[in-house]
Length: 176
Length: 251
Image 1 (cartoon, rainbow over the protein chains, first blue to last red):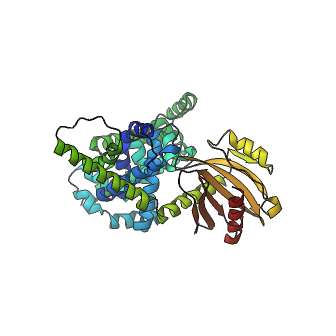
Image 2: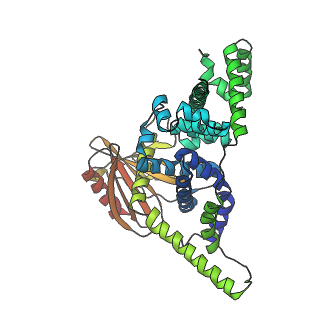
Image 3: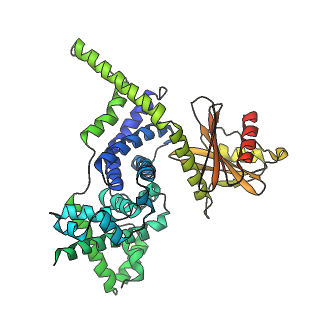
């Protein structure tokens, strides 16, 4: 820390700090609560600062998001291990986080989409967030989530289908 | 019902990730496949809906301040003081931020939990390395060959020793990345078990060893002579400790 020289610090500020929003957004969607996301995003930034000497150029956003993701999963393992062990289970998820009723009465589409996204298991949620909100390429997604690039397409496909069916369930709930 | 292409080419086409040749191939398919055409429209609708909802959540200002302030506090500054009082207040605040950051790094992050967490990531990297098709590997029992190979790939000098005479023959090495950190890995064998020794430079002082386990692996982590080592194996912890002592006495 003490010997982190001015040059390193400047590079860190220029390369990593522009991605604080990306870090928070990913943490927010993985953890589902803003307060937790703030705590974990801050910790991830501290860790990235510590590891910064190991970053030898390349995609700084993907590098940071990889650390954010690892920090989030470690946090989940410690605080909400159930969420990691669950595969997508529509009924269970809808019971835990959102029912067709709560989805249906959500007063706007933003809330409905938020609840639907939050019913997905973390690894499907993260891939959608990285692709649709963060605009990451497949290569970046593979680097951040540590899955082979060939698997990105099929994972995205499953994630999109699950989101779609979560949304269909919610609109069915709207019709008596 | 869905088309066989729905899980693969369709997604890549929709996301603009296919090569020209593959995209043309898919477009030919699309002319005859109503399922894919419909799905493409659905994907488009879903994306529009996600965009319209503005789900992206930016970092709250308070978080941004918490992250940036400590960095600025320790950055060289040429700011001219506006008033003496303000200046002293700012200096005091800066000191506090530095103190908090150092405390966090010293205690929160670089604590036992942290070391265990890092070892955990190393075990994960080991599992990854055992998957087929791994590049960046050299198999050799000649320490000089392995050292020469690593020399061009790791960004630091790797002390390579063969301990065949002590019952731990060198099998090879590779390079890996742990949390963006370039690391060198030496592989030794003992009673049919591989022992992977991860190493990378550190500026921290020598430390005694810490041990733990994750999945079915044992690990031992220590620092010596400005290098951090983490040895991982699915064999016995006693053998890990023997190898650790061999490495330490030669380092």
